[in-house]
Image 1: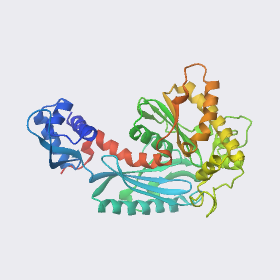
Image 2 (image 1 turned 90 degrees about the vertical axis):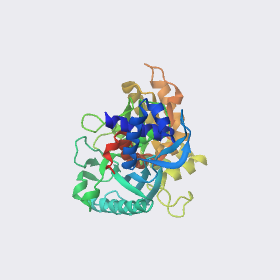
Image 3 (image 1 turned 30 degrees about the horizontal axis):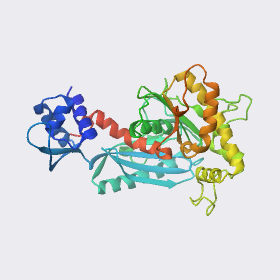
Image 4 (image 1 turned 180 degrees about the horizontal axis):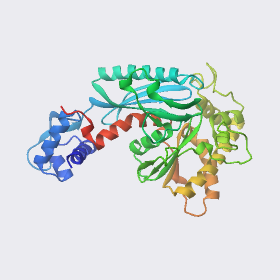
Length: 395
């Protein structure tokens, strides 16, 4: 009961602060004495601070202002992408305080080397966080692969990296800082749910970088499946007699709407623009190159995006009919290409979703785009603390 009440009080301060202790008592329905004890414990655990400035409560004299700490406990998110590494630190308010992205060609490199570089980036960012008065309370690693439900830090399969059966603890240099792995699409969906201010409780979040991943949020909870393999939308066949896929099947969605397929159809190089190319975004940013070409009316690019959108719409039709979601969210690279993908995706959905009502606006781009997985990794620790402040050491 006390754990729950601590979470209720911390949630009230986070959502409505600054508040006085009297204000908190009025909002959560507990006595002032109970709230005062809970607040003292939250202060001792470094979750809440009480400022000298005063705020007027609902009744009585003004009280000192309670706010969630912008120093102290924080979440560290790390990301391994096919072409980059990333790190992010968020404070308990959910605000990103440090954000780093480093371009790295990770596909096909030894897992141990990639993980060692991710660990080094994490150590650098943790040192920066300490200089800001932040203390990392948890670490998650976003990976473009399958992470089973069972504990143990295992990445079962990450085909676009060339990984199979990689256990993080076997390669991470510091055993005290080994992060918990999670699928990047799952983390992107959670970040969208937690941070984007949207009302959907049940939605499908589909995202793309080199591969295509999807995540299901059902009644506000991530659905991982019986073994953690849910969401492999990229390997849903959309053309059974289509080209061979790296997964061993044929006609998978990735062969029509994945980055490599879209670039190939657009007549562009497989890794985006060369250094000094027309995008002005530096080497390797294929998504930015596609967006620039599409905005300029480049016909092959427009045809490639239309083809991708129609294949994506076909795959999402199955998801809509099976899950009956409130909405569909295009995340990752798809969010940045939404202006050209949405018309063809919506056309497919309108033509094929016939057994239930479907509104075009139920399909929308993510507000987070490619930032979603890394932000979700950092926010996971923050959300766990908000739900159970006793995870923090007592002062």
